[in-house]
Image 1 (cartoon, rainbow, N blue to C red):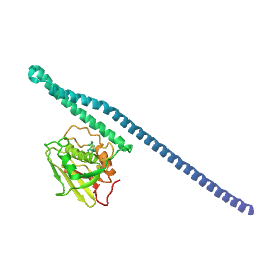
Image 2: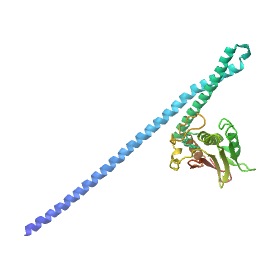
Image 3: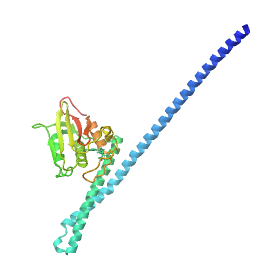
Amino acid sequence: MKTNKKTSGLLQLLLKICSFVIKVIALLVGREIVQYKQAQAQTQNLARREAQRRMNEFVSIASHELKTPLTSIKGNVQLMGRRLKNNIDLNTHSAETRELINEARTLLERTDLQISRLTHLVNTLLETSRISANTMELLFEICELDRLLHEVVGDTRYVPEARQVYIHVPENKNVVVMADPSRIKQVIIHYLSNAHKYSAIEHPIKVHLREEGQVAHISVSDEGPGIPACEHKRIWERFYRVAGIEVLNGSEVGLGLGLHISRTIVEQHRGQVGVQSIPGKGTTFWFTLPLLNEKSNIV
Ligand code: ADP
């Protein structure tokens, strides 16, 4: 009887020891698995970053390399165009030669336009690689935003005369900020070009500038197709384009980079960007910049 009790006690102890050992082993294996997964995630993360770095490097080198021949081609095309225009007296030539010269002029003008588009694309790519490498430079100075807006809206290179653009700025008052004017112009031009690109030419574009507390608020509204709410976050991402939104004006190729660049520029000025849109009614893109007053200082 005594021996039986002893044996069962021993067995229970053995069972407890076994279950303890199993728990310890399970814990150790679990820890190993977690560590393995963490190491795997880390390796994947490093590989992704390396791929991103190489991609940026490639984009930067490729766009730099493309810029030089493009500048030279553009120069030659423009020179040829000028020579055909200024150095040839059409009256001294036969009708056939005159026709040929006119045709050559038209072709050169078209080529010049295409080279400008290509240059714009290359510059856009270069900008993104600068953003990724954190090497975008800003030259701050005192800017009057109302004047900047009038300058951009009045320039038919960005919005053709056929399009009605209404501009509303505060009366008898300049809206002053500390900013890099060429960069802020770039953002306004991009918002305006998109409004023009994605909405029918008969619909007006409205540009508003107002002061809101400590910031200047600039918006560009169109009556285009609108953007679904689920896309409002993603449109600011690099290379993101909304499916099903057609280019209605101009033949500019979209890379899905303009809004990404605009947001980076505005955020580097300590401002914010945003979009409001109702599908089927239109879209308003806006951004803010800190107003220049005694309290706000950008270093
Ligand atoms: P993209 O060069 O392709 O226009 P953006 O970064 O400027 O690149 O815009 C990203 C996407 O957001 C566009 O491809 C387009 O689908 C959408 N989008 C931008 N602006 C408008 C607008 N005013 N109306 C409708 N869709 C727009």
